[in-house]
Length: 208
Image (cartoon, rainbow, N blue to C red):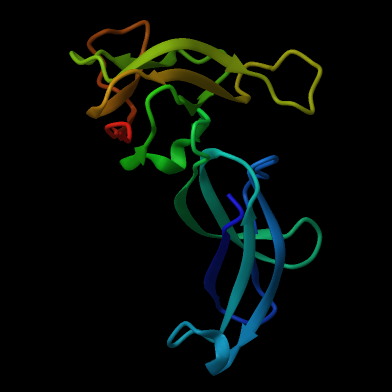
């Protein structure tokens, strides 16, 4: 906590930039950001670089994701994105670690007692649903599952609209494991999964 994180991302033109996909209240804040043009950008060959300075203010773990965008009304996305995983530790304090589909095929380290929340996208009313592949170890344990409604909408989601399903795990014992999910048709057991998600999880030995 208190550490500074500096992210430098190349842009096609000085007027282009990058923006966060989401905010991280209580964990990480943006202190300032600016564009470095030409040779001073710090990234070889880049016409310009967008430099973002951030500060860790609270424990946790999350996907830090930026999308490239043009300035203007709402910042129109350009299609490129940057993703990394950030863990902020505070000695003696269990943390909540949040992972989205941007973290697919990634790695994460959680301490014993930490909560690991994995959010996966689905479609309201779809015949497809996420299914957890059981593991034969006792490193992490699934403790809860729920569908999350959009925060801004008070109405019941309509069929065909996007929705997230949150899977809550708890780190129980030191070791390494892989958490796997498949997105399968619940009405046809013979149909192959349409997509999958997996995350390598490490729970280190506690310090002595």
